[in-house]
Image 1 (cartoon, helix red, strand yellow):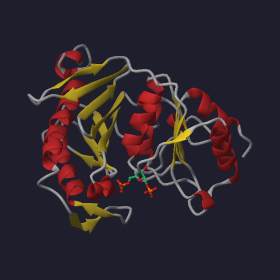
Image 2 (cartoon, helix red, strand yellow; image 1 turned 180 degrees about the vertical axis):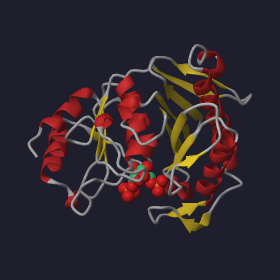
Image 3 (spheres, protein in one colour; image 1 turned 90 degrees about the vertical axis):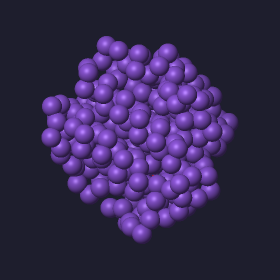
Length: 292
Ligand code: AFP
């Protein structure tokens, strides 16, 4: 079944936005060969951008914003929320190319999208949907719009076709852990020790979207914790943690900053960071229950 058919029944403006994002992702999947290398610029976090970052960001701004598919657009590559003329009140937060520092070694990267109404600076549990695309051996699109988590694959004809419907999080013991061990906070160190003692196997590529995709299918937990030097972690609440957390939660998992359900956190700015624990309910309950 094609993506457009599968989206029947959702609000028209949301369907158009999801299909618009899917179209851009097809262009991105073709563009890796022609847009290799580094850009001259840094993003708002002072990180050097890849040419792909800048190009992909421009494509999304054009396709979603300038064409009027959404009213508000916050991009990880832009300093402010952009507002466009549009008939809808849809707001999109987007990480155009998560994991782009891995492009130089040809590892999997992806696009992460959160969908809101009436603005973007809202807690994750007010999202109307979220989706991501990973560009790996295959280009795969996963979406959740409040009615299950569904996966599509880009086929040889250039269409996204259904691969798996109603995904539920796996039950294997896998552990993705970011940050350096010598900076771990005590409760986090205890959490990792408990999982290791329980036989969890390490899985961490450095591309959040790909790492969470693996945990979603196989099971376990991904964490990029708060650490000494950055107690609120590294990953961005609005662009990375909340959309992926929404999807994993819809698949029967959970997400936390170690203290509360991450989807209840009200972002104060679009560039806010959050520690993140994302995966099976059992693992998320474990970290939330540890004394801090
Ligand atoms: P890039 O998009 O700059 O590659 O950052 C990716 C990321 O935000 C996330 O996808 C990774 O989990 C995390 O950074 C890895 O960061 P470190 O390499 O600093 O551990």
